[in-house]
Image (cartoon, rainbow, N blue to C red; front, side, top):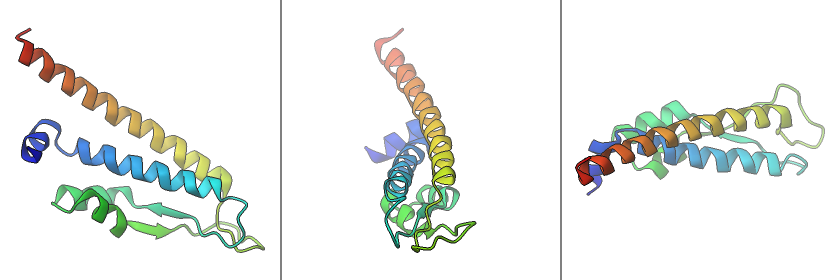
Length: 118
């Protein structure tokens, strides 16, 4: 059945799952903006999607693409979260998530119409 999903959705199913994981990661960074010593993390989305497309599981691909963000300005308490940067990247990723979701919804709608014979 996974093969059929791959044929119907291509890389977009993996992209949606990876974008969801990245949203959670960025939200965690934002939530910990005032936590002393917290190190902001992010995922190299392109690297993760490439690994998932080549056959790695989405979770493994995401784990392998994780890294720490290097802040532009050092914080006295060791926290590397730059709130404006995190919020901007979160918003960009949320728009990309919604775009991918809209594409998949359209694809599912097309398949449903074909199954109904419309």
